[in-house]
Length: 116
Length: 112
View 1 (tube, rainbow over the protein chains, first blue to last red):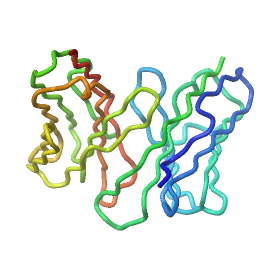
View 2 (cartoon, each protein chain N blue to C red):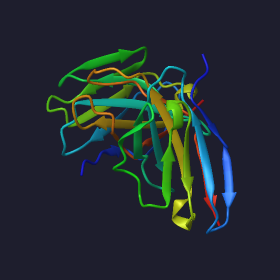
View 3 (cartoon, rainbow over the protein chains, first blue to last red):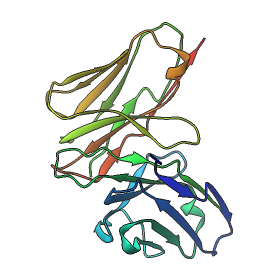
């Protein structure tokens, strides 16, 4: 079974440009999450989809970030316009939808974004 | 705001030695997870602890959740070079919580 995949693996852009990151979750996983780690900091939650609906977007830093999950399958995270402080590694994770105390989240390899 | 601290930040030991890393918070978590991350990859789940005082063993790794569910430890017996990596703890703040809070990680290097 394929794991969570992310594209691209690396992206280098200039300040002010737009970048779109893509995440393909594990097939059948209704939960999809975006996280990011900026240099020297811990991994931080950005948002959570259940199917195509945004369940929790409390971690989105500002309105330059737009996440979508059309059809409840893959998700995109667009940064427009990108700023220097957006540099970091963006992780996507997915899990099955179950009402349990904990849900194992499977992480993708991440997209390393560098804004110059 | 819930925060998790991990110590030590870095640890370099010789193969065969034992070690313990810690994950601490002033907040209570409904569950706590330990991950290991290698360069260029995402975190991989090692274990989830849910009950205060719970101890789980995974081969040479022993995980413990504090009685008050505010802290956890990971003990590795007879460390091997393959244990090298970044160890992360993450806590779920609420029941059925999906929003995990991550610690900064402990970077372990096991030298042959």
